[in-house]
Length: 499
Length: 140
Image 1 (tube, chains in turn yellow, orange):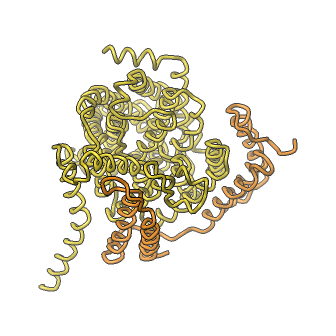
Image 2: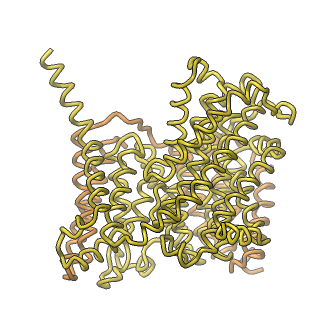
């Protein structure tokens, strides 16, 4: 309670309130634009926080994150164009609702469900994180190494369609993360004699290229989509039967979000997908799903927003991001001179609890702002995209130039934009690449420290229960992800031959 | 570019990185040196590329769309080449026009007016507001 009061007093400071408002507003505005997700929004706005105090900057970025997750649902419902992957689930019933003239109700329910899910997620975050921190304070390099390996494997195995591709992306990202001078031995790695590469590549231009530029190249073709209905306040109010239908799905969705949010490799997308499938399974009329069932909007939206908040648990408690967006948040914290992990909460309670309290305020702002502003977001969708995307390209360029007042960072943006685009077209996801890029230096550091502490004995990694369990789960997940499909195809072939 | 070509390219990059990493061995303590992690990662890329080439899984792939790719690349490139030579406003204008050409609509006059207003807004926000040390137009 004392901690929460400390957090509230910090979050209520005028500069933090303004930052929270700006983050939520800008995040929602960018999230509404089809094709531009939370990761692109955060990378785009990250340079704007450089001039701010660390807490104020992070409060703003967190606001951008959940604002963008909320905003993405608007384009999903009105245009059938999801702003973020987790919003793709909202399209399934949200767009049919809009076609039936119930777009206002769908948008209202999205706002309420986001608020409920977000609030429950914050409750779990504020109660669970300190408990994890107590355990994490006893973690050594072996435990951290094992947890990072588990995160890599979970992201590869659960995070997308083809685990091989995800794992290849993590390794590639890790390899890119080794560029620069090795701080232990002073050896230059993959610098090709360039002075610019001695410090390695910065996270912001890499993320801006992978998620900003590549998303814009992909979304240019959506330039013609337009909203065909106007939304009045009266048309947004759900009926009594709507309220009855959404009450339990919202709570179940929030619970699923709280469960999946902190798990590495899952995050809001998997949480939303699970909640939708669960509601369909529990429904007495599953045939309504996909044709405008209001529960199909409420549950994934609550789940998605609960997962957004609880994804901060491993990020803040352990310093290990489970999702690419959290990887960018960790990078942002580090740029501001804050190293996330158990010591951050011990040494800087003002920052941690201030951030948690700002989540409450941001969530409330989302509710208060977005119901009256739905009309504004709808009108934003009517601005021709052919005007919007060139502006975003310029903002990406100026934003990356402002990092070090150097055009070399924009060259990195272009290079990673092209890499991201080609990879996506070939079915490779850039998200695991970013996770590898951020986590690999941490993995290498902990591997070296563990080997030094264990005097070169590899059994040191199996000296604690946590690391043994994490490594065992990693091996099982990796084996099932890589060899499961191969085994299946061999069995099918054998069956065909024998028949 | 076919899926096989992507795996092949990835494998070649991994192999090149592996051979480069062999030169980073500095003999650090406890068997871990500057080469260890790059060797593991690049070796892993080669192995997984071989797996990818051998066992194919059905995932959705699509071709490269040249027009938006070239337009957005040109937009970023123009910004790189012109921001320090000509200033922020000309760089913004050139970049926006190049990006605009990535789609099929051709009403350039109203777009130019919008781009000019946007360029001034960007200069006001970043140069005047956030102190970015770049002139609006070089020479002025």
